[in-house]
Structures are given as C-alpha cells and as structure tokens.
Image 1: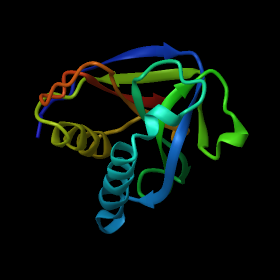
Image 2: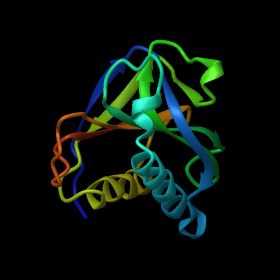
Image 3: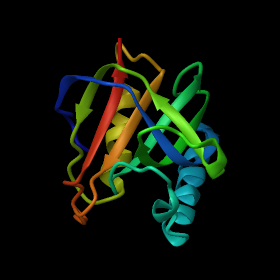
Image 4: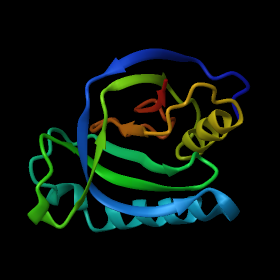
Length: 156
C-alpha cells in the first residue's frame, strides 16, 4: 500500500453516468464482493456498448447515496458518462454534482492499486462531502499498472 497519496484539488462541472448499480456497504468485505460482481457483469456482457448517448468509452465507477458515510450503505454505479439519462434504457443513472474534488492517481497493479487508494482515503479523509465520489478508467489505456485510472473524492 502507498504510504503517501498525492492529489490535487480540482473543480468539476456536474455530469451523469448511466449503467448498472448495486447497493452495498464496506462492512464484512461486502462491497469488494458486490463491486467485483458488478465489474464481472459489466465486462462479460459488454454493457458499455449498449449505453445510449454515451460521450466516450471511458468507464466510470460512481459512489453515491451514502448513509451516512463510507462506513454505511451506499450505491455504486458502473457505466459511462452520458449527456442525459434515458429512462427507457432500463439503466440506472447517477448525477455527479458540480463541486470540488480531490483527484488521486493510483500507482501499482490493477485492481489492487485502486483498492489501496480507497483504503488510504478511508483512513484519512478530512473534508469529504459524501455526495459523490468516482473512479475513471480511461478508454484505450489498457495499462495493468493503473496509469489509466483516476480517483475523484468529493470534498467540501
């Protein structure tokens, strides 16, 4: 695990992500199992290809609807950024609101480097908003070293 996480503060415009979702918790490794299953389904069924109105092939994993924070229940949405959600698509859509975010760039092998980054964030996460956080997996960057991934933490 990385001892020091480097990050930069940025301001993001709000956007929507449409895809599949799961309601989960970090208790008893439930999230690790649930989110792993979500990824398995998303990739094996090539769901990114069926998302209407997607703006790119980047894959987003959004964490939202926290009750009350990372120690309780929250919703994870795995999908693509869209201009606007299409209700008829049968997909779940999440709003990542405009706001301040702390951007981390995980270092190491996937998926472990992303999990390690989140574990460090959970240990030391002052000023979190607990409205929405997300990971971005850049399309066309197939790097097992995690260099195509960024983690965004919503902050106050």
